[in-house]
Image (cartoon, rainbow, N blue to C red):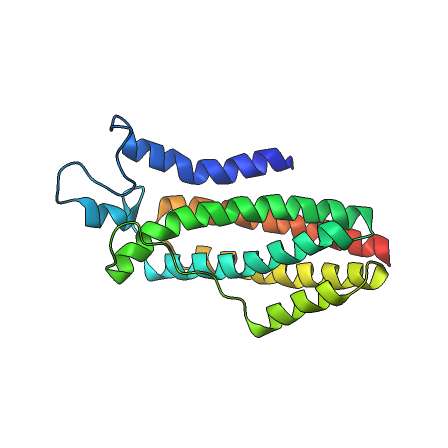
Length: 207
């Protein structure tokens, strides 16, 4: 699959409904603000006119937490990976995780505002890595370029993608009602599945 198509699809999944919501509105209108003076709060908690649920928020947070780890170790691999296929994969991963994070942040921020009752414009909570993820990043930073590094990075990505796929699958099986959120989850699931196949192919070549 062409990565440019994947990235464009992820962006379109979120921007299309947003554009539909603001069609015909003044260009200075703030995100989540409704026409008139009473609709801003409810508009801030919706995506494409649909209420963001706790399951939606949990899915986004888990996806972003796992994606952050994949992004950080791929940035390291861009500099240190010796295997050409792994280095190329790391570049793809940085691009795609960055785009997915931007998409999910744009969905999460108005929903977080609604959930907390905070003022409009409050940012979504920062993602935190668990101890195991921080330790893996530290190990990769301390490992010299070479076969050992490549195998550690490959293993980390395979485990991370397996966890990401599980998050998408569980969410999609929960009968979610937010159409735009479902579209993003389906797109992410397709990309993750493709990446797992690529990683398995690289692993086979490295044996």
